[in-house]
Image (tube, rainbow, N blue to C red; front, side):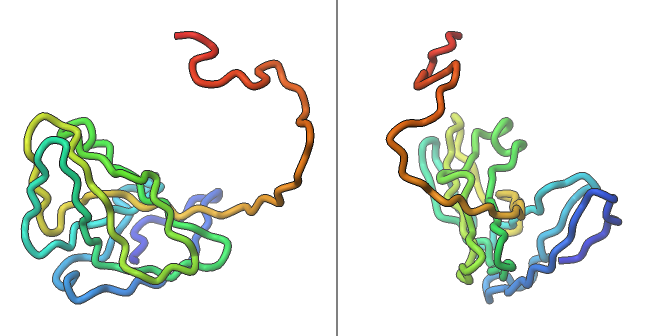
Length: 159
């Protein structure tokens, strides 16, 4: 992946190897679009257009695999422009790509809009964010520390 922007003092950089699949041929490697972008765009590597009718979902190939260093994950998230303009989002979001996964990145797109939407080859369909992973050590407990909220859940603070 080509980095066109200099890193700021607070940014880190890791190397992520990218393998392309045969159906990715002719597409550009993902890239960060601006200096402040936290994610790079994943492109649709479908050979033919995919029409999503309202309420329909489809598995769209990204045409790439990545090799993340241990201690990192990739999060696959929706693109806000597709969501607001067309009602297109991702199921299973954010999708998690673990550091030991080497298969092709694919996304489940769903059309929550009112009109059919056509996914075409090379379209930016999702964004991928690389994040550090913190592992939790789970400790059995009979009781938890008290808080003001307690076990108040869904809607407990009102509208």
